Length: 397
Image 1 (cartoon, one colour):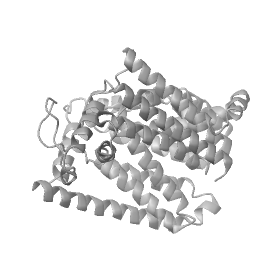
Image 2 (cartoon, rainbow, N blue to C red):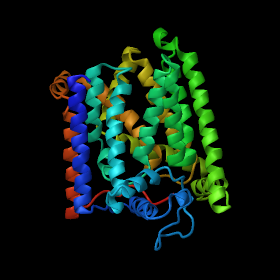
Image 3 (cartoon, one colour):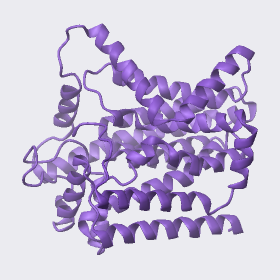
């Protein structure tokens, strides 16, 4: 391992250990209702036989009772395992969320380095921690961070499988992870992997291995289908009831609830809602991306076309897809915040030479982990002191 990589690993492990220690010592619990539900469910699962984990029940006193079929249990199992190992059960889900964040901040620059310079890619590891959405989800137990991490794994596997077919295993692991964490929302995974391949088709070197990558993506989708069937079989074996039919009908039923009057205006309103959320939650880099896009359009500059195509495709996919439904929530387009934020941060580095020099000075292996430790500590301290936070969305599903 190179010295810089070793320093980075040590820094991230130290930051994560400090976060875990703080959560455990303070007995931290967020005020977000969904996070409290998932943390309590993981804690209850840790005390029950593992054979029944696939079909947990709602804890007493929540808005629903009976079996939990709002999502698959992929998010809850790692936290329950951590609690089984002795970590405080009520904080285990928050601790795992910190793991997902750290892993995302390590992997995202690796993926970005396939499109931009190494300095720009490494800067993303701390710049993206300054997004409003990052502050909002700093200490949570929701699905979003795990979902984003699985998507990054799938994208990395897709990119690397152009050189070596064995990396298609990563694609499969990422997509299967998305399925087990967020159910039908995993459909965006294969589409985004396909966007990634299409966006770089004009690069001769990268396009040469595209057939191998497409074959790997097809196998990964088949792995998702096989996992869904296996999950259904395990759930029926444990409960005698179906999972996917109930889950899908509930998700689609809630998403379309709200009436049909003024349907066109409602959809247009949804588009504006999500675009506004992306503009804010990816701020200030979303603003830099708009400026850079305007300048590129005026000058007919098509540089970095692959990255731009992928970001635009991601943005359109999430915004248009979720605008079709009547129920809307900020968390639905969570990956889009990071796609726009990453592209905008790179654009800002290109727009300002002073900012680029500043980022180069901070290009140290320990800086991203230090930023994570500081912001995490500030969030936990604010929670303990009762500092008001912004509530951005309603509860489940």
